[in-house]
Amino acid sequence: MVRVLGGFHEKKEKNGKNAWHIQTNVLNYRIKQAFKEYNMVISHDNGTNSGSDRSVQDRLLDAAEELFCEHGFEGTSVRDIATAAGCNIASINYYFGGKDKLYVEVWRRHLLSMRDARLAGIDNVMSQSNGKPRLEDLLGSYANTFIEPLVDESKGRRFIKLMAREMVDSHLPPNMFLEEMIIPVMIVMQRALMRICPGLTESKAQLAILSIVGQLMHTVGAKTMFEQTDNLELPKFDLTEAVNHIVKFSAAGIRACAVE
Image 1: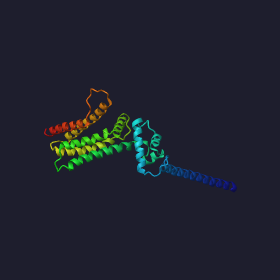
Image 2: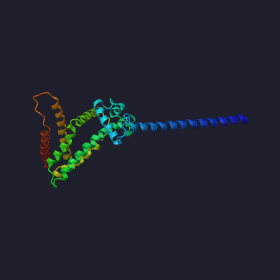
Image 3: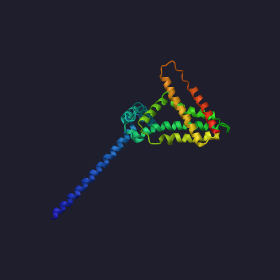
Image 4: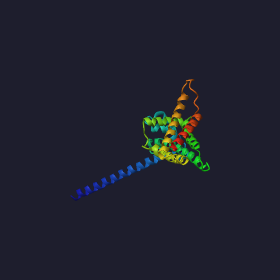
């Protein structure tokens, strides 16, 4: 009886050791896989080891943006992006946390660049005018910083295509446009307009900004349409003339609203 009990305890102890060894082996395997994936990210498929983390992220962002523009979010795979960027697939998860977050960062790069350019333009007019900023100067600066990134021969057209795809098949977080670009610029531009034209209320200033944005967006679309047609009867589209017209037209309307 004692031998049976002893055998039972011995078997139980042996099973416990086996279970511990299995857990240890699994843990070791996971650690090795983690280090393997880390080394894959650092070394990259193309053998480029000298680039900084920033350059790797930029390559991934550039490749992803081009592919998202051409094939859409669903039509672009992680493997496609990694191959185009000359990186390992694991690098996308390592640097961005997956395709969804990479897509967001592609957009954020554009939005922050446009936001900062518009804010800098407004600040430049308001701070370098000897305390007497002109409405036309403010509107001209805003119009140019708005238009320039959208009409750029390569980046601008690619961004418009990206925007068109996002409108049809949205994958951005709700309110990203509002929170990261539209609201910050709207607040600063509204204050600038009310300082130059004290008679403007907040609501009138907001409506004026929306009106200007609508005119500028239509101008970008018209420019693209005119450039793509072979109709010789249409006049040549002059972007500078169109922007100057928007500035003069809007300045007159804003002044009229300020005295109502």
